[in-house]
Image 1: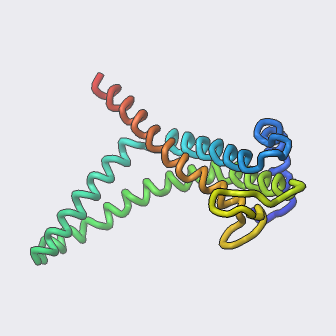
Image 2: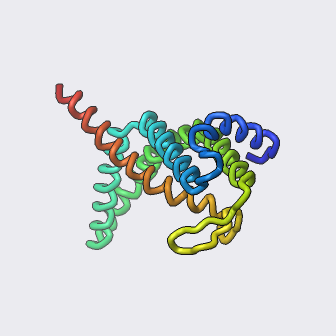
Image 3: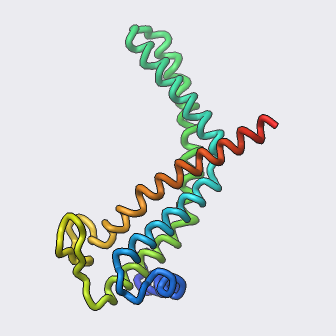
Length: 186
């Protein structure tokens, strides 16, 4: 990420695949950015779903919901003994949550290099365009390299990847959980 030469080399390698597939000869940069965002959102979602224990995660969410409900109720009723008892259980629950978060960080390590490579390629792709001004529904002249909070091309990327990734993960969870529950019933 911090070594510019390595990032550009990785971006060039990704370009060997992405340029002919979604580069469109530089004619449709918005479609290229959106397509890259959809490809990466799909990749990220599939990797995340593949490496996540969905049943364990659902059980932990149910346990945490019940714990928080009990704790809230005990505090509202001013049941100090029950609150103390529940607070003694909290470190064990936090340990369980930390284990779940640890697996999420492992997944991020797998995908990190690929994401950096794709972002490097997108940056190189945008920089190589003969024109960097596009029109979007909310503004007619957007410079893809302009920076308001983040570069405009990255904002376009996010507009595609965030909702699409959420949808893929949601549908994937439903499908995988249904399959696991069906297999458990058999």
